[in-house]
View (cartoon, rainbow, N blue to C red):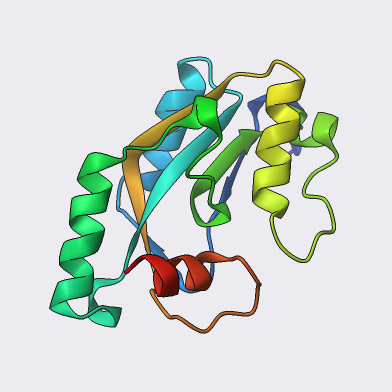
Length: 147
């Protein structure tokens, strides 16, 4: 059987984190956005409710309803729920070797090139809501300061 080569523009790179759990339809939702013309998909994450008190979970839920993801403003970029076409990744040179913010940087560079960045709250990812994280200004700090 001969191996076939897949053109790089037909490859989809989906990113999540080790402390996260994707929805069952996560990849399908990203691919649906890609088929709709997205070069990059910025998805939402939700904190694991087991890591939050009832009060913290309520605060998160209220905040999530009030402030939906806004890709045009650059809010809501999380490497735990991110996808892009293979040729876009090659064009951007992948994630920059930054200690923190490499996901924000990648999406910023995609926007600067005029690529189509689509925000979606479909196919969400549940991630650890720990308050002690490895990255300064990362999600753990966000949870600690907002909930």
